[in-house]
Amino acid sequence: MTDRLIKPVGRGFLFLDSHPAGCAQLVQDLTDQVEARTEARTLESRPVALVVGSSSGYGLSATLAGLARYGIDGVGVSFEKAPTVRRTATAGWYRTAATAAYAAERGSEFHFVNADAFADTTKADVLDLIAERFGGVDYLIYSVAAPRRVDPRTDTTYQSAIKAIGRPHRTKSIAFEDGNPLLQEVEIEVATDAEVAETVQVMGGEDWVRWVDALEERKLLKDGFSTVALTYIGSELTGPIYRQGSIGAAKAHLEETARTLSAKGIQARTSVNGAAVTQASSAIPGIGLYVSLLHKVLGEKMQTPIQQSIALWDQLTGEVEPVLDEEGRLRLDRWELDPSVQAAVREKWEAATEDNIGEVADAAWFYSEVRRLYGFDVPGVDYDQPTEVDVDWPAKA
Image (cartoon, rainbow, N blue to C red; front, side, top):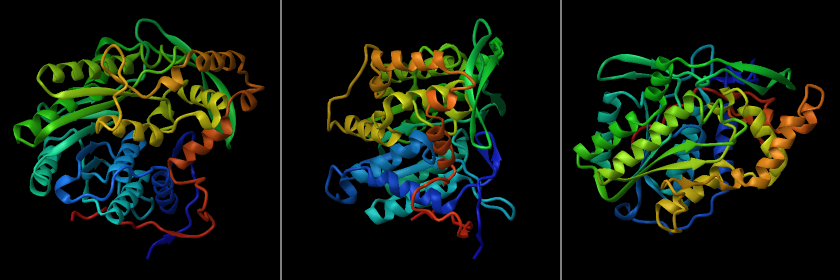
């Protein structure tokens, strides 16, 4: 037993440790929000899904929604760190352990592979597992957020950049000092052509294609196979740093990849999700402030990742008609981009100052949501009690 008293120690939006019990409770809370749509199925009739990026953010929500609503089988892939003598495991490690336990309780056969999703060796191992256990997949959900990528074919390391394109951009951004919100002005540098190209290599669609191609080469695409890559468009307020910036170039490549796959006869789409507090989004200047303002405007009407993932699965399975835009993208973000919502957010954005940021934005909610990413501030967890930190990665069935 290695029980430890875990406290949230870190800087900004990054914490050194995560709380195992809090992460497990968070998974339970998310699954409790999902209403099962189907009765228990036999192994032969269960949908089989491969979720690349299954331990955090929208990938985690997609995994949990699929398990809870449709009893999916399959494989989740993520890259997490195990506990050490000095540090706990990453939050995604503990969330994955809790997700595996939930899948077992549901009677789903769902395996989790802890490895670099970009590596060819990972693809080979995952496809071997799929071939052995399921004979193929019905769905591939691609939800990878990584700062860098090593191309296994060339051994080249690509680094993503969060920068503007064309000209520098200044934006308001929220930060916290001892839990108190601060409003900052942040200068966003212009990305070089090389930085844009590297960002596309990391966050674009090349690896998504390689997963699809690898499945196809192994004849593991079941009849009616479909795949979706999760993406984001967002507001005009964040456009210069996101959609019109280096990240946006990668997202545009992701959408072009969907069209390329579709032209080959693969049913492939991007799913445009709404804004949320994730470990990836909190690192982008301006996004935290924008999401805080969005929640201030919408409150409980703001759709969570698990709510959006329920809608995603309903559309993937044909339970409901897909909601597409003119470019063929699934749109789960219409609630966010409603003109009246955006007008209210813009009004608050322009009104936000150093003196009123705590009132204009829902800063306390945002900060608590960031802490919840690491398993803190989760209702029902006693943080004054030690908790077991040596949690095993789920074993393959």
